[in-house]
Amino acid sequence: MEKKIKSALISVFHKDGLDEIIPLLAEHDIQVYSTGGTQTLLESHGIQVNRVEDLTSYPSILDGRVKTLHPKVFGGILAKREEDHLSQLEQYDIPELDLVVVDLYPFEDTVASTDDESKIIEKIDIGGISLIRAAAKNYKDIVCIPSKAQYADLHDILANRGATTDLATRKKLALQSFQISSHYDTAIFSYFNEEFQDESNLKISKNGGETLRYGENPHQKATYYGDLESEFEKFGTKALSYNNLVDIDSAIDLMREFEGEETTFAILKHTNSCGIATRGTTHDAYLAALAGDPISAFGGILITNGLVDLATAQEIDKQFYEVLIAPDFDQDAKVLLTKKKNRILLKRGSVAPPKSKVKTLLGGYIVQDADLQIEGPDAMELKTKKAPTADELTQLAFANKIAKHLKSNTIVLANNNQLLGMGCGQTSRVDACKQAIDKAKRLGFSLEGAVMASDAFFPFPDCVELAHAEGIRSVVQPGGSRNDQMSIDYCDEHDMAMVFTGVRHFKH
Image (cartoon, rainbow, N blue to C red; front, top):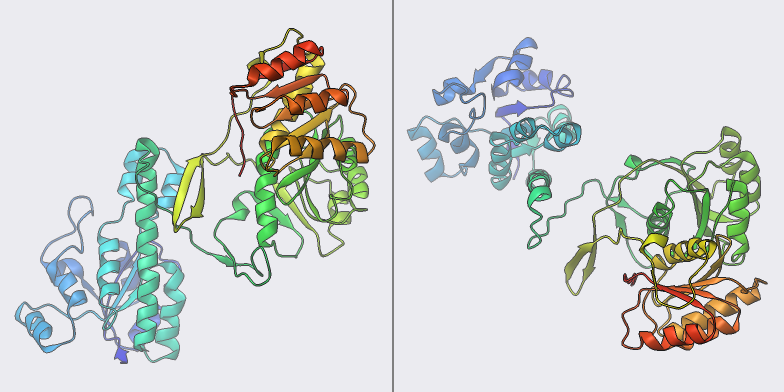
């Protein structure tokens, strides 16, 4: 059913964007009710405004906290355009309101810009959110414009549709209204929950979903809800895919382990690092990382904590990759690397790691603390008669960081701050160990003097036996198996060093 807009209540925070709408209100002879600054703006454009305080017989009170909360306002919004409700409006001298235009106090922007709790609390909108809910509930008769994002819809209604709406339009605007109100309430809950950490409730609300080309596979639809621009500056026209986003997230998590340290370069495929190395320059770190598995590097995600200069870019340019992430790029490097259109460069900003991780499963959600712990040399407890050398401890710490970010079960073999071989995603730890050894040997690496890291304990000494046979002399693992002593005894019998971290890093 079509409805003509004859009256409107307008009360907004963001007034930019109203200038083109205001003349159309007069053109359609729409009776306007308003408050405060919005009223002043409307009157400055020559619009005759009915003051809400004249309608309610109450002024704006309590420092503006109460302006529109009154039956003479909400009655005109909530009344069904049916005989019984209309007779009550007439009885109590309440005007019908056909259009409600609201833009809420900027709560999220205030939280982002200040720690002053009093200022934040004052930006919790009460009247505005109530107006939105009331108007959206009565969408069969009311047009609700719930934010500045919908001003364009209102302009279209007034300029091109004769101030008339059909039911479908009003219902769609109601949907947008409840989306805005629910998101607003979630933001407020999240603010309070920073202090209380209520784990019995989960609230998630993200705006501006971006439709991706497809999901993990072409037959799957996918949408990304997030704000990449807050973390990256993107160069290149190619759109990021679902798999790109998943790999980028894993790459960022891995590289956080090397923040503030020497220049490190990593290459990832399907969320797992297939090459990683730390060197004195980005150029050398890239070449060493690439040597870790040049075949798997094809089509990978590249990430570094160092500046990408022209020399590095020239080497990278020889390789096909999907995404390159770095804190910055030389101008010459950027020009070279953006010539090919199927590449994406991401200049990474400084963003704090998320405190929790969320997954969907079994028709619900599971939330856990993010794994932000990593154990360096000082946290490693010696369990064998032989102690690792200072250099071996450094290598063990390096390997332990990599193992944390590979799919379980995983084994990492490393030396000279370079990944030599890894086995990951295996159903047995011994298979992961065999895979790591085989990979390193196929790539021509000597394992003599290398170190081994495991993301979880060894249930039997078989992995240690395999490592010893290849010349590995130092091992790091969390410990915690009832058979720990068997692995320790084997190391003692074969002049190997073993340290425990006491922390498991499963990644499923």
